[in-house]
Image 1 (tube, rainbow, N blue to C red):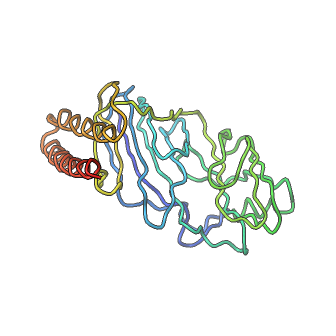
Image 2: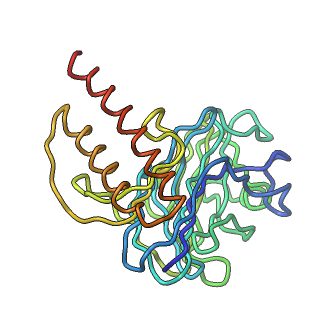
Image 3: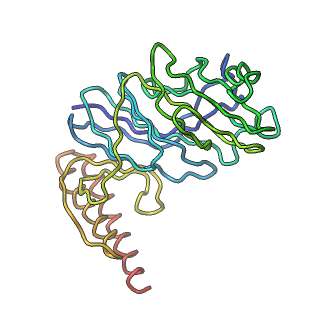
Length: 283
C-alpha cells in the first residue's frame, strides 16, 4: 500500500514576500486535509474546497521523485509505489502587498519538492534592469507592461513545466499588463507525474471529509470502484452522490471503528442529499 497525503496550503509568509533570502516560510498549512493508504495503480480523486478570503491557484502532485501541477480544481491522480502528496495551493483574495502601487508577486515552484525554491529563475525581457530585483525580491512592478521569460531549468536540472497564476502565458513567456497586479508562478519538476483531467462518468468509492455534502468544504477521495454511466439532468448529480455514499458503506465495513464513523457520516450525508433533492424536484 502507498501512503497518500492530501492537504491545502496558503501561499506566502506573514512576514511578507522576499525570495533571497526568504522573509519567512514560503507557505502555511490550512486546516483540514486527509491521509490514506492506497493500492499502487489506483486513482486518488481530490477536489479543492472554497475557502473564505482565499482563492484556489493550483494543485501539485509530488512523490519526491517526480511532480506535476494543474490549475483544475478537481484532480484524478494515479498512485505509484512512492508516498504521494497532493496539495491545493491558495492565495489571499486581493493579493499580498508589494513594494509598489501595482505589480506581480512572482516565484519559482518545484513540483518534485512540493515547495517554492530560491533559485534565480526569470528574466524580465521587456526591461532587463528589473531582472535582478525580480529574482531577489520576487516582485515585478507594472508601471509599464512587462514580459517575463522563465529559465529552462533550475535547481539541479529541474525543467520548466508551466506558468500558473494570473499572468497570460505562452510556453516560458508570461505577460504582465500595465497597471495590473497578480500572481505569477513558474513551475518546475525533475520527472513528470501526469495529472489527468477527471472523467465525469467515473463511479468510485469515496471518502468524504469536512462536510462535502453540506457546504462544499473539505476533500473527496476515492477508495476503489470501477467505471459506470448514469443519468443526466436534475437526477444525475443526486444519483452520482448516492452512488458515492453507497460505495463508502461497502468499502468501509472492514475498517473497524474508523469504518463505523465513515458509515455514520455517509448516512448523514445521504439524508442531506435526499432533502436537497426534494427541494430540486419541488422547485
